[in-house]
Amino acid sequence: MSKVGKLLIANPLMQNDNPFAKTVIYIYADDPIQGTSGVILNKLTENSVQDLCYDHKVTYPSSAPKVHLGGPVNHKAIVLLHTDDWNSQNTALAGNNLLLSSDKLMFLKLSQGNEPVYWRMMIGLTAWAPDQLDMEMRGQFPYNNTHKWLIADPSEEFIFGYDGDEQWDKALELYSQQMVDYYF
View 1: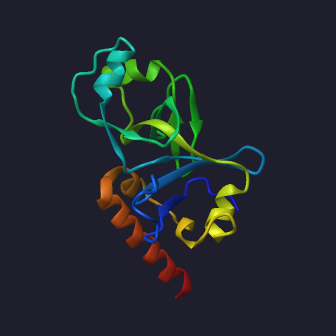
View 2: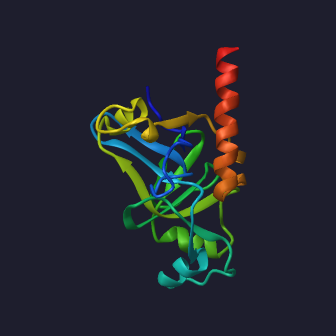
View 3: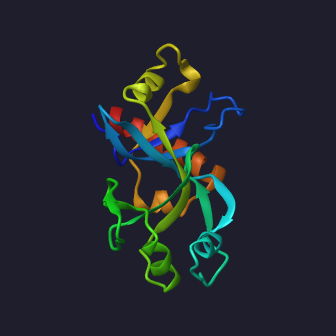
């Protein structure tokens, strides 16, 4: 079963020294050959969108919003997770009526006020080799129960409306509610 459009929620048993502790990850690609890819939604960097625009010789009018750490893979990758009311030159489907864009034109468009209703910019990605995420979710060797991820179905409001530890706390509530609804 595809995980595209799902949230991965770090297990509360995960040790705080694990870089994925208290993370909420949105999965945008899941393929048996290529593996699984996503972006961490709730970890901020010190960079602002203005900083990244400046790096691309574009003036962004505000030092807000901040850029999120999408994950530990490819820190040169800059991606924009956004609603499907907007696109750029390199835009791909990301599940749940969301899109993922990554190109230089997006910086210019954002700086001119041409932006999607909801969006979040990230540096880096999160990725798993084929079957790795399934092994983690089962706690299969070499992984254990502290590596197990919780999985939930998000709304746009959830993805873009929370941040930081609050988003992780709300994700745990969402997971719990969806589990109760599933069984009752």
